[in-house]
Image (tube, rainbow, N blue to C red; front, top):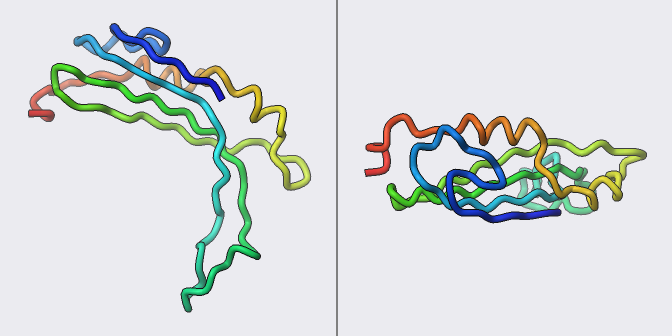
Length: 117
């Protein structure tokens, strides 16, 4: 996947509604996740029968300097699968954020900074 870091008012991922300078670092990748429990009710591993699938994961860590804290924004979405296998070429091409994630970041704002006091 791809990643990018910047300092300012958003940089790579535009965050125009934040009124303070921020540092941000973002990435896009894939993760294999289980669709069911890892163990049965007796505590025995279900690894041999467990169904898994690939999901696209987008992350952005935003450092709110004036509040001395960080926000982590994440978006997970299923990857299209063919015959039970994720499209390997799709996983390899994940470099840019989706329009949905970019819209989420553009709408990010802090309405009450005292929440971080």
